[in-house]
Length: 134
Image 1 (cartoon, helix red, strand yellow):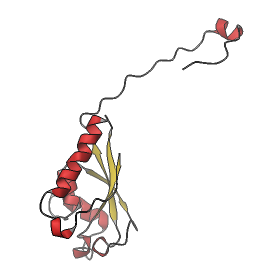
Image 2 (tube, one colour):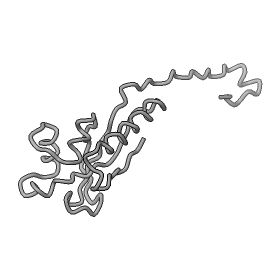
Image 3 (tube, helix red, strand yellow):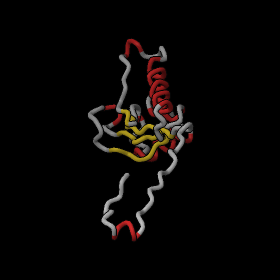
Image 4 (cartoon, one colour):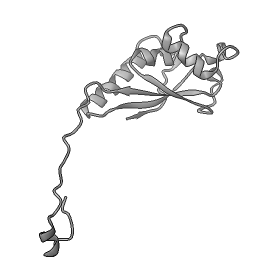
């Protein structure tokens, strides 16, 4: 599942609405037996430390828990793992237009059983069975 930015209007932030929306995404991924969720996350507070950290170093500090970002830190806490930096993701001044590709692996995912398709033997091919039925 791919998730784009989900924003809660500032008048309604702090009521757990964003967390509920994210939990519904997790629930959907589990019910559909999806491998996980991939998304892009703004690093909303990066501008505060951009003079001291590259985006990658900033994310490393977030993962280590030494810094807090009002967007990505919450997603990390919910189990998302940062993958790579995405420059020019958006025009958001706080992130200096950077975002981070993130992934959540569904712990309930069960790989489907592999389907074994028998290959026709040479004799049936000589008899005109030149295609494989799936």
